[in-house]
Amino acid sequence: MNMVELGMKYVMNTYKRLPKVFVKGEGSYIWDSEGNKYLDFVAGIAVNSLGHCPQVVVEAIKEQAEKLIHCSNLYWIEPQIKLARVLVENSCWDQAFFCNSGTEANEAAIKLARKWGNGRYEIITMEQSFHGRTLGSLTATGQEKYRKAFRPLPEGFKYVPYNDLEALKEAISDKTCAVMLEPIQGEGGVNVPSPQYLQGVEALCREHDLLLIVDEVQTGLGRTGKAFGYQNFGITPDILTLAKALGGGFPIGAMLAKAHVAKSFVPGDHAATFGGNPLATAAALAATSVLFDSDFLQTVVEKGEYFREKLTELQKDYPQITKVKGLGLMIGCDLAVDPQPIVEKCLELGVFINAVGGKVLRFVPPLTVTKEEIDIVVEALSKALSA
Ligand SMILES: Cc1ncc(COP(=O)(O)O)c(C=O)c1O
Image (cartoon, rainbow, N blue to C red; front, side):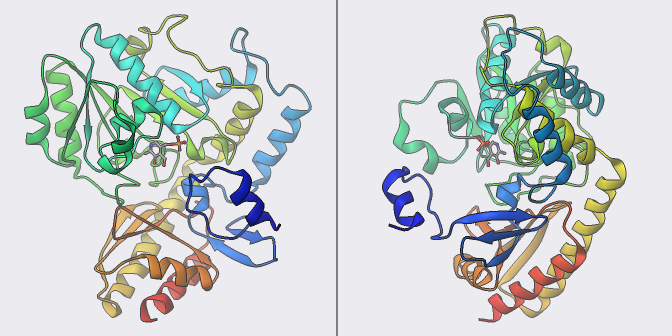
């Protein structure tokens, strides 16, 4: 049996996988086991923000692996403390909790909001949102297709349309403790809300004494051209969740909160055996040393504008593209046609992109991408659209 056949036999069938095995990555490129090279604008689904195998992260992992890989949160962990400090000093929060993934970070946020709510437990989330696959985060996810096979789901979630302040206002009750949303919806289709909407959400939260939780698992850490996505919209949330890019490819999640909220958690309330372990936090410390650099963030803004301009030019020739949208290097193209054949054609041409939210092409390349690499993708897209 070849590797793909072995995979089909031994690995559970939870992903629709391409029949390819990837064995090597460097920068914006990834190679399959047959030696074919691909330009990767999926980047591990917005994980490889520093490209594949970034030296700074590889070195940090090697160095830490030789010292201490894991101990436990029963003791203080040096790189975890340093990482918490970096995250706090680069944001508006006071303390961090560490876990291993985005869904876990959101579970932590849901529990913290309920504990803080002190009897109020309801969390309002958005239609088309995506918050993860564990039962709490899955229930928070405003897409029935993900939830329907897993009932009964936990109580205490309400969904309202994104970018609709009136709907949110009406949904607030005396049981509500928080509003949770993505500053830009990723899996839902790269949906960018208006700043006025997000500012209105924050104002409603203040008026009704609700926590504003932002899920920045996808938008965080430079993806939108700012350290955090919320910074594009002039708001100050109470809780923020992170994962994906945080470890430079190594699994780690985090929840950050203001001190007055964080203090609701006391020993015994929440934990994760592996959360914030020395290896993961050393990797994240290395990744954040680049991801928070203001000169680096400026390059993301410039390359994002360049990419959107190129896509807008392409739109003139291909009316199948109905809208170019996004911020920084989180970019989407609304299509009037099925995106799947375009994704497949690009793959044939050696370019990875993917489709989200029905008819949206999503581009989340490494933030280290070059303009020449953007040109290659635009060229491939042009061929795919004309095919
Ligand atoms: C906004 C958002 N939140 C949460 C998650 C879940 O993250 P994970 O797959 O690490 O659990 C994702 C994953 O795509 C996401 O995009």
